[in-house]
Image (cartoon, rainbow, N blue to C red; front, side, top):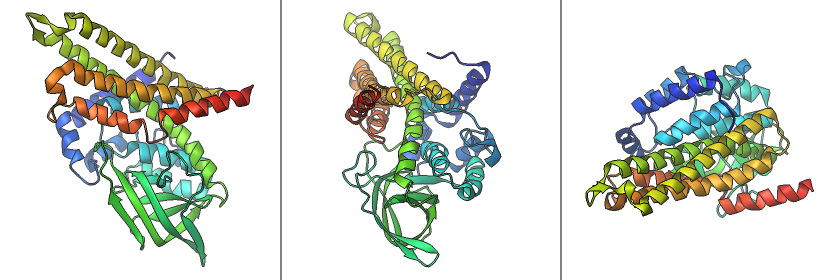
Length: 367
């Protein structure tokens, strides 16, 4: 596992303190019941701390930090189940605009993201697609100096909160304002209400082309990889928290006159959870460091790490419920919230099987 610098440790501690104050269980549950799924006051605080601009270049008002710093922030947010459009706005959109290389769009949008003034998301998935669709069915037609889009996108992160949506149509990416005519956003009922997802319907909706018209799919694919590096951090942080919940309960819950953690079955389960959690953390930090250094094999490392961390988070979150016994199965206990987040994280950027297949393809291409 890469060694953290003093500055990186300080960053992690500062965000951990913030999450303890701003994302307790009661607040998570309150935001789960809202349509937008975030607190504007907390969003402003994230901006004031420079967290929204962490991955944004300094020339556009950001910190110009690397993937390691973003991953550390995502670790703490994942452990706290923070309800906020951080992944969609500060990570996914930022990576997409970098890949598209449209300097005018970057100059307009990135400073506003860093300041907490604009929430954005990316709409790429269509019915039946786990990652990028084989061919986008969203159509685009010229309309004077602009464009018109028609089609349906699904599983759009934070769609209800977004003020601007970047839509894959044809082989281009188009910016659509949330107030544009012909745009309809509806919320999806998903297993994890701590991370809102929506369905976006475009009916001859006006849009602006961002970047070149023939690089959209490639740019989104690149941005998905960048976002996946950050997602690894969230998965590792969530896995560590679920493991600690189980270990803490095993130490304090007494049955038959002794702590349940002293029983071999529970003891072995907790030991396995520790191994899964530490391995996930090591994998997440390794991939982030490889991304920052430009390691030639980082994409293959990302693929295998995404498969592993997805399954580790699900396994540990599920075992956490088992360790807690009957109380762990109740709605009132937070254990199920981590399993719900784990299930979602294991799907939003491709499921473990997809990432394993990708790993094999990448390794075969290197031979």
